[in-house]
Length: 239
Image 1 (cartoon, rainbow, N blue to C red):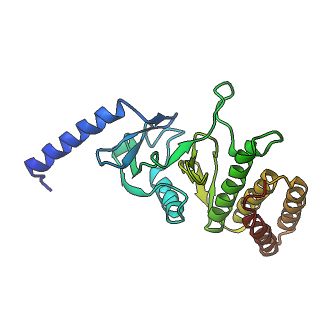
Image 2: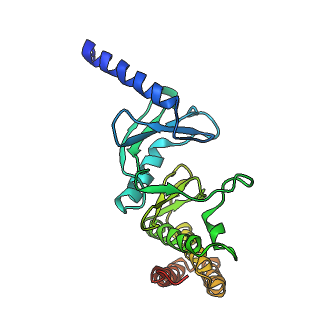
Image 3: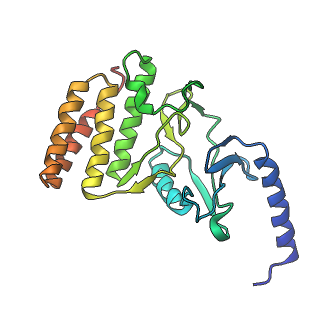
């Protein structure tokens, strides 16, 4: 199909604007860079790897996982996905959440910290509570059949007023079912119990679920995992 000259000019101008924005990134990682979109209120996450690269992101899968979380209100709204030959330059457009959300405390001496580390003894109470709420969100995703990994302080933000977690990066995640879904729910719940300061309950809960899984009792294991997660959901501001 032949494109009109006006369309080509608009596309050229758009790419020029995006290139300018990309030169001043909001953030960057090993596989992608995030910068302001040409659409106010949105940002772009653009791949820096070809599809054939060992560590290339599957942006289509990532968008689908993020869309599930966005519908639950725990991830930025997805505005679109643009794919290019070979995957070089693939980009996801999503809502810019920086007006209402902020990054988590980081220690530049040790690099990114897992959110679960906020449950360690001596951690600030507000961060322990954040870890509980984060685990609750991971459990909610698991119930939707999504396992999300790589949960560190560079991939999660918190609401400036409410402290509510927001999940940013869905590059390391997958759809799960059966025993894998049970494990995803059980691990999120156990981490939440640890963050709430009831590690003994976490140990007993995890052992019970995995004993059932090892015995091939997947349905029973899921029932126990759901019961544990229901208890975790009731933990609000008790830490």
